[in-house]
Length: 284
Ligand code: SAM
Image (cartoon, rainbow, N blue to C red; front, side):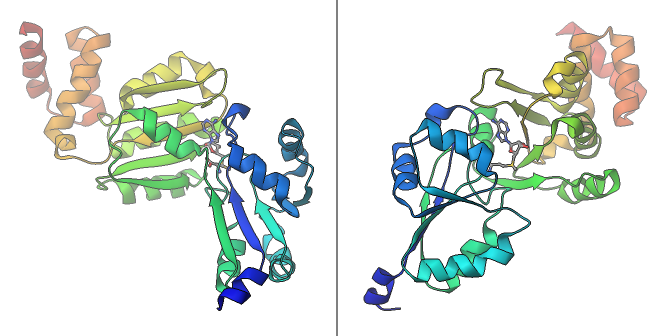
């Protein structure tokens, strides 16, 4: 494509918007949305409130999973004709568990300039505050909602060494966290980041057994928007190491005999060995 062609073509902006706190809207996002010919929004009523708050009057068009393919051809024609179009989602960064992949991919193949306007993203906010390793991580979006499929997916992730990140709906949180604990191991560290940037923001990091225990005692924490960040697999999660870590957590809540009995049930570890560990711990 020559420079002249590029100049005559429009621009497709991919604009991140807040994930709760409207003060996270960046000046560049506001300026871009004010200047474009068209804003593509998942839910025009929802985004209408955001646009009103920032006095953005550009036209909006609904763009979601159900019409993305159907309207992309028309949008590409408009971009080729020189229009400037912005894509936003209900919250955060478009394409991150949100629509837009097909459009961006098609526009790129047509040589249209694509400009990201970066900003909030729930997975990055959660990872940055989780206290878990951030040098290597994998984002999985939402796990399958059906139990069997979810458990199968988690089995596949069992030996992944990088930090694993999931989005989850509140009504599935308890079941998902139980599956993660049972399949990836109760001694792994994990972080539940809830309602980020909002009034009831909660960021809790602990072993998976601690988190599930805490959640059952605080059912109100099952509400709102949630990101789960889970430590990757390490040698310390091998059988013996895991037995010990589970026991250590249980000893914080239970007398030694009950902690050992629970640890045997949870890990399938040897009772005598766990008893010796508990005795050693009590002498420390
Ligand atoms: N595109 C968005 C982003 O950049 O994060 C994600 C959209 S996805 C459809 C919605 C999911 O993101 C929610 O179910 C939740 O798991 C996560 N999420 C969005 N906002 C959040 C927040 N304020 N706190 C925690 N999780 C959030």
